[in-house]
Image (cartoon, rainbow, N blue to C red; front, side):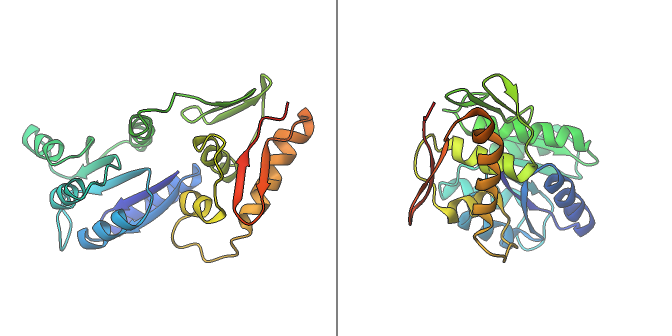
Length: 224
């Protein structure tokens, strides 16, 4: 899951990035409203964490402009302010949720999970493909009823493929959704994680789930 954090307090922003990346999120940072607005329009984020008190362009304005331009990405607004009018203004400008500083990191991550579920109106709580079941909220994967242990990146790659439900997913699309914009390494890193998924999800169960579509990318196939 790819997240944009727009927060001018660098220590807080970097702390959020470190914590979320440890849980498997790909996190991009912006330190002012203008930069946040540009990134939010250019990249496929699953959720945006947006501070209200920002230099150059405040969070209310960023949120309003995004909604005016048709960006429907779920937005969680953060503020050091406190009061029902601030919350009302955040929601009225198009935010999906509101959290006052200081906040609990556990509550923040729970709200992010809830927002991403709501942001996919057509998606069920769990993702299934044959006997393969992924639960985004519990961060679990089961195959034929048996638990399968994945690393955070393996989990994210599998979730990306499952959300495309049998469609061909290009390598660059997986990179865009699973790695942050700071990644400048070899794009063939995707192949490494796909191979790992095949070893864990297919080989022990006698399956062939992830097919390579030469020159295009990968897709899930039902090969029980």
